Image 1 (cartoon, rainbow, N blue to C red):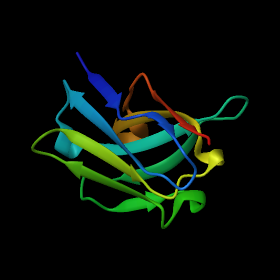
Image 2 (image 1 turned 60 degrees about the horizontal axis):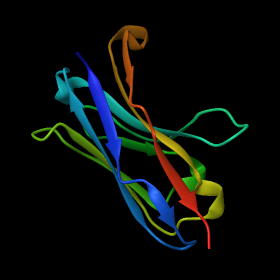
Image 3 (image 1 turned 135 degrees about the vertical axis):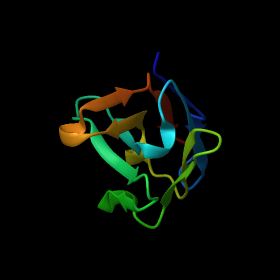
Length: 118
């Protein structure tokens, strides 16, 4: 059974930091591309950051220079370090794992809420 379990969300003031974690189980983690997506109320889910099996990364323009994605294959974990948080970063953040042609294997976590407010 595949599980992606996010943690680390919460309430933070503008300018603050949070570190999200995603624990994966039930998959050969090292071969999967991992990503963090977010969805704010009334908006579509969007890719925030991705990291390939080879540890190449990509980021949404809105978070470049502020967020950092990383992975630990030994622990089957992926992280999102979020700095200089803005109110517009508030959303439910989801962990995603993809593998295979046409993303044949595509798994999602349940999400963790990030609120940025003073």
